[in-house]
Structures are given as structure tokens and as C-alpha cells.
Length: 162
Image (tube, one colour):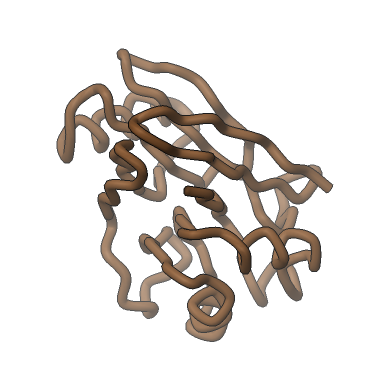
């Protein structure tokens, strides 16, 4: 199973659209996980149109889009806990790991955004992934996303950047 991991699209306040090569990756993925900050109902609608299956949460810029603060998805034997990671950069990894552990055990993978900075680390025994900003919205220096291949509980993550 191929999973597209994206966050912080910020359309239209900081970016006009998702780059075409990233749209293609999103459209062919079996599942898309978006960690918030769509920035508008139209951006959320666009992702729902692109994705064959979408798991998404609200970011701090998404008060009106009607998404939950956390979502959990079991994909290919891997549990993904998705949250935005809102708040100060200080303590970010602690907050995201705590959110994951509130929903699942330490074998789960946390997917979060908010910082616009790519992250793939293990914190407090929990693997944390931040795909950065799919549009390269400031303060990101470039557009980034991740894809994850999941099967039988195994996870292989690839970073894509423009």
C-alpha cells in the first residue's frame, strides 16, 4: 500500500496550488494522510478530489473546515496517528509523541505538521514524521512531502522535495 503524507498546504493564503508532480503522487496513492492547515474549505475539497481515500485533521489555520484534531488509520498493519502539532516549536516532539500515545501504543507512527520542517525521528520510543509543507508555504524553504510504503506492519518512508 502506498500512502502519501502531506501537510501545511496553506491554499490560498500562502500558496496558489499543490505542485503538479506532488498532485500526481497524491492522485496515485492508495491513501492520503494530511496533517492539517489546508487553509480553506476549497483546499480541503481539492484534496478530497485528488485522493482516492483521505485521512485528515484540522490545523491551527483550519477552524472552519470541520475536521477532527486527531485521526487514526490502520494501513498495511501500521497504525498512523495524525495530529497537526499546533503550538510553539519548543516541546513540539513531546506534544506529538504524547498525542500518539494517547491514541495508540508506541508501535504507532505519528504524522504531524505545523512547523513546515521535515522530520523523521524517534522520540520517546515513537516514530514521528513531519512531511513539511506540500506547497513550500513560508516558512518552508521548499515544497516537500513523503510517501510511505506499508505492508505486513513494515514501513518504508521516502522524502520528496522540489
